[in-house]
Length: 126
Image (cartoon, rainbow, N blue to C red; front, side, top):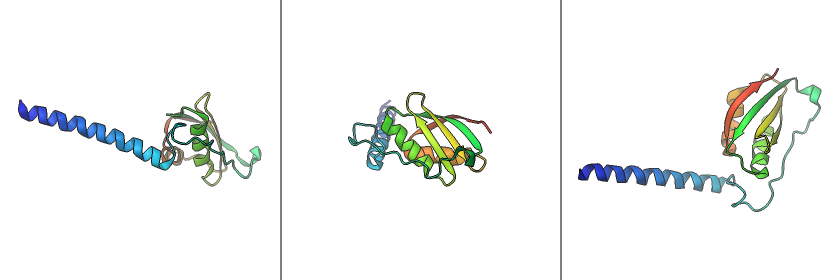
């Protein structure tokens, strides 16, 4: 019985430690929500905004966003990809992604995860 209690205590300590570590990592990256970065995140759009230059489109559900700063971080991360023009809306928690090349779902998911957020469904429109 004593060994089970020790193992349970270690499991709880590991869980709490991991949760604290994840919070620290998000804060350190500057991707924690509004509370840790009081200044407004500036959106960096795509240089080329000619819609006819982006024949491929997709809609992606973004999870874990809670404010406009979160949406700006996701949008900036997606717009950093060459050939992508993204617009992210906090009210719908949705990203409209335009691309010059066929859309690579893994690349989209990776960019959003690097910004500190999650991706739900991605619907490729064309």
